[in-house]
Image (cartoon, rainbow, N blue to C red; front, top):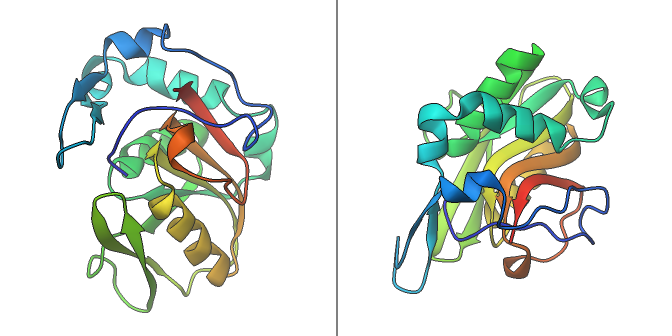
Length: 188
């Protein structure tokens, strides 16, 4: 999901690490006003991906409760930047991935679900013939929650058990309560 700032509500994740805007990552993240439309501040995390990969992956792993990854079979990678983080985490942890993609990118059979974004509409698809697994969803930013909620619902409809969601940035004020714990590095 590509949108606004960073935050996660303590009500959504009481064990999350409460970090403020003094975190060193904030010095690297670039804010782009009025993108992709007027009134939206886009938090560009790509500078973190250029030269801070190990620090980002270390921070994502540190955001998870001890032992959680022992309960996870695979990572649910949410298109598009969730692919980046999930791939790096999967490589480090030797875990598999389930891809949640835009329409027409996965071979059938697929399940799909349309959802609203804060600036439009979209659809996610996933293969629905995979054996049930325990999944940790991974994405870059949690803003209104539309993309991550849709990913959760698709996984549930395919008989996967979603144990939580891991995001780099969470915008607490833009979304309601999420059905599983949300773990995050940065909050705003």
